[in-house]
Length: 81
Image (cartoon, rainbow, N blue to C red; front, top):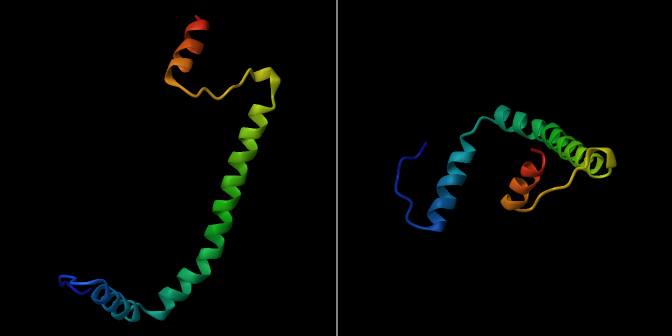
């Protein structure tokens, strides 16, 4: 790793490029191959959360509503007691 003061954007680009070339190709290959799996896992998680929210919103038995303000939250809590 270069331990120098960066003086410009061009200098930064140059340092980053030089350092990137030092990264072993096996590490780069593993990073590339793991990205598609990571993206798929993230997309599945986001989709799962969206489906849970839709399920909660459409369930009339839960009396579920997203409260938009702190005052609404406290008012809802107060009505339960």
